[in-house]
Structures are given as C-alpha cells and as structure tokens.
Length: 340
Image (cartoon, rainbow, N blue to C red; front, side):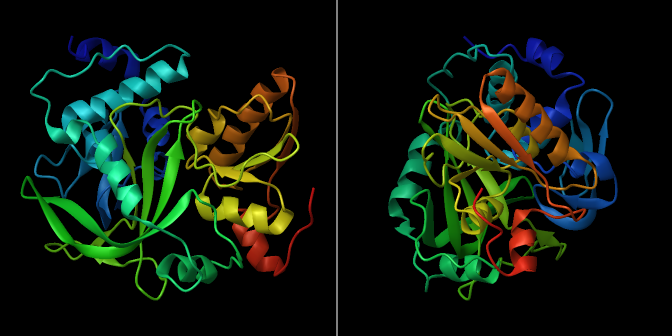
C-alpha cells in the first residue's frame, strides 16, 4: 500500500512550522520569513518562508526555486520525495499518539528510502571521542571542559558532505565530523545528527561551489523507520529519577558540566515540547533557551505542563539574558552554576 498523499496534505495543512521544526529546522526560519539563509543549503539571503497553509517557500538555489512543505522537508533531509513524505507522516501520526499508517514501500524502492543500515554502518565506523581529536577540540572551543565523553557522541574522521547541484548529487569532499545518535522513546536508533568540523576543532566553513554562499555545517539524517516524535540524543542516563532536557547538544553538555545533572538533547524546540521520558524519571529539569521569538520558552512550558499532568516534579529554568542558552551561561560565569 502506498502513501495517501492527498490525506497527508490535508493533515499537514496549517501545521507546517511545527512539522518542519520536528524534523530539525530551526524555529527562527519561520519568524524571520524572508531574506535569510536556507536552512538546508545555506547562503545569505536566498530563502523566503511563505507558508499560506501549505508550507510554501522559495530557495533560489533550487532549480524549481522552491515548493511546498514536502519539498522543503526533502531539501532538508536529503533523499527522495517518499522519504520526506514518510518523515512528515511520522511526525503527524506520532504527534497524535497514533501509529504511523504508511505501509512499506514497494519492492522497487530506491536505496535512499531506507537509510537505517547506511546510518548504522556510519555509526559503526566512527570512533569514541577523545580530547585531542577534532570533536574534542570543537567542544573545548565551545567552552566545555569535559574529561569524559558520552557514548552517544562519536568522531568520524572523513564524513562526506553532499549537495544537490543541477538536479544531481555532488560530493563536496570529506571532513571530520561529530556524530550524535538519535534514539526513539522505544530505545531504537532512528537517526544521526552530524556536525562537520575542521581538524583544529572549528565548525567547517563550507561554501557552495557555484554561488560561493555558506552551507550549513549541521544536518540531521533520519532512517526510514522510527517515529521522530519523542526522539532525543541521550547523552547521560537518568540518575535517581532525575533528568534534564535541553534543545542543543552543546547546551545539554553545558547543563551536565554546569549542574552535574544528566541531560538529553531534544535537538529543536518542537522536539523539546514533544519529549517522551522513561517511567523512571520523576524529577525533570527543563533547561529552556531564552529565545527572542519565545519559541524555546513556549516549547518548554508545554513540556512542563504535560509532565506535571503526568505526576512528575518539574523545574523550568530559563537563562536571564535574552537570546542566550545554558552554554552561554556556563561561558559567561566561567564556572559551574551549582548542582540542583
């Protein structure tokens, strides 16, 4: 049975910002709207968010110049249209608490439609992080002073970076990268978050070969199966019923260093608001970003209310300074901000 695209379009109508944030696109894309970098292919001002219920956008780097929310999901995730539509279905059905109704693809499925084995192989070939490798140097440059590194992070010495050029995939090269394992509420590995780096630990400055515009150094890759709703990078296991949640990976590491709390990274504001926790977590610390557009705060409040209704003790913590997160707090204070 094939995907019912007409029904999926109807379900997704007027919900595209939440859907695309669930797939990892930053919230500010949908508030700034025009003359901004494309979240998928970078640049300076090539992207415009239009929406009008269907997720319409313009990216001047695309041959078609844009499309609807499904096209933007495909542009962001890579792969083909079916892979993007399946990811959208998983977000919608997962958000409603229903199982995804998309059946397996026909036997002629393109290999890109099922990335699970490719991502698993990529993870197996990566190495544990060390202080003197590019990932260790990158985290140190971000202001983190880790002595040990979570097993959910790994270092890949030469990760390929692909773009679409003139309708065809083109590899820009191989670069060091930080891989972060994305795990579903059921404990299934459903994707990898990738950050391309330089050997001395800076975020890679990747440029489009035609326009010369900047390309994103961070991307999320999802396997074909697995519900993104509730998935997170599980950096540290809960301890004595306590767990902290933050948006970004580096922010979650800062929470651990600054407070001693075990912390997971939900990867986006949408991911934070839809987090699913193990039953053993009874004391939750929601470590919100202080966003100018209130995206992080609103997502954190939704999560806090839901977890309180679940009978858990919840602490909602927001940095005082606008446009800051808990990594900024750690760097500004220069020391731990106290175990809670």
